[in-house]
Amino acid sequence: MFIRERQQIVICIVAGAIVCVFMLFVYLPLHRQMKTISQTKATQTLAIAKSAADSKQLPLMKEQLLSLRARLESYEANIPEQNTFGGFLGKIADLMNENSLKEQEVKPFEVIEADQFNCIPVSMNCKGNLRQIFNFYRQLQALDRLVRIEQVKLSNGGNYNGQVSMETKAVIYYRAKVG
Image: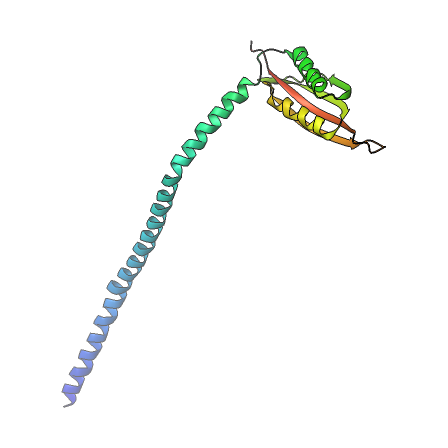
């Protein structure tokens, strides 16, 4: 009977060793591999979902690109190829007269030269009511020339009669001559 018990113990030890070997060399490596594959699958699923969402945005981005190209073409069209600055200052003075602005002063500064575009800083001063000044700015914006308003200062007159003094710093652009 002692031999039989011994055989059972040996069988149990061998079975335990086989289970341990199976766990260490088969189950655990396969379990790690399955976990890695699951993570890779999740990452790929996320990437596919992101790509699908991005592909839905493509028509919108294409539309924005076309819109920006159209704006860029009109932007460049508003920058003349030569310095026709004197005529443009005349247009500004005409706009001021058209809006009945008083004490007009349009003063250009020195030309700033760059590679593609040159610019001329301009100081504009006048007086009028807010409606007149607002109309002047609206008409200035509608001109066929790019003007960037850098600073606007509106000051109320001392007697509060509705007259406002306007001081504006602007930059007017034109294309640099190449070659």
